Length: 178
Image: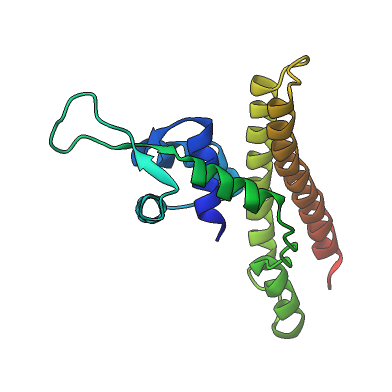
């Protein structure tokens, strides 16, 4: 149920077309809530049918022109309702952790190399988040909206820091296995 709310958030930040939303998901929201362009377009249609958003009138009528959308007051109210509601945390479901558990009974072939690959991926993601932090959140940029956006980014940084540390520890354990 959260994709519509991610789209409402993005549209409240800046009215956009489906293509622009897809690009913004790839560059920001997608770091913590991913969606394909098909999912985004399908959701835009649903949100419009529910009266939560509307297509902005085109400046010049043209066939095939992309529609830009904005959030209506009912959409803002829905997002505020959803934001204020309590939501339980989701339990961690990670394939690597399940594979490690399975390796305890069927053997570790292939696991160590994949742990190294995962470490590289998490190190790259961490470096990217840190670059974003340096670029987008310089000292003194501490308005309420900036602080909340930075808090989301910090969650990503902290999560990637956790995974890089855990993966290094896991590789140390692998080095000690018989």
